[in-house]
Length: 231
Ligand SMILES: C[S@@+](CC[C@H](N)C(=O)[O-])C[C@H]1O[C@@H](n2cnc3c(N)ncnc32)[C@H](O)[C@@H]1O
Image 1 (cartoon, protein in one colour):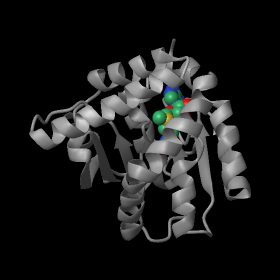
Image 2 (cartoon, helix red, strand yellow):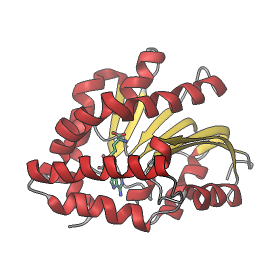
Image 3 (cartoon, helix red, strand yellow):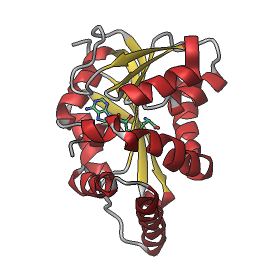
Image 4 (cartoon, protein in one colour):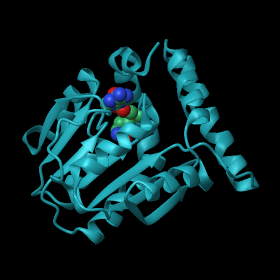
């Protein structure tokens, strides 16, 4: 099953209503909040905010708690998840079904671009990077959260990695789509390490402002600023 099919199948709603509901309060929302606070400390009052691969609007919901006056443009390939985002954010968002290789956005128009668990799911991650660069204005921020391919092997990482895999493997029991969990593990193995990804960002016109390690390196976050002139 392709990633687009996975996130348009029943698994998508299961992912949101079970996996996300269990993992977000315990861990992932802390990661999302850290990135949101980091980004707002650089651009306290962004005008145009996009959440690419928004899913059901988890990032948007937390951002709007900090800045209730904003509107968030939610883009995702999954109609079921965009529907959930709309139920959650209502008129405080707009909702566009789109592929993360072709952003339906004007060049140099975005102040803050969030991509949580997005680039790894792109069929062509480099294209997603170039589209992010294109749509951000100079000085705009790209805020990335993802499960990068592990590059650490210390005990703290190993323990956290074991917990992460066990949690995901447990969800095989409840979901009919064991394939989706296989896909998750495979996509991490094929993805960049954090060092590779930050290097690619630097080579393509971004400067890294902050990078974060979560659960001992099981997940990572990056806040990068578009340094080059508008493209
Ligand atoms: C793991 S979810 C993360 C959702 C959300 N960012 C969050 O933090 O909860 C990955 C999201 O990427 C979306 N996605 C996967 N492939 C995509 C693609 N090619 N273009 C756009 N969105 C895609 C999925 O539909 C899903 O909503």
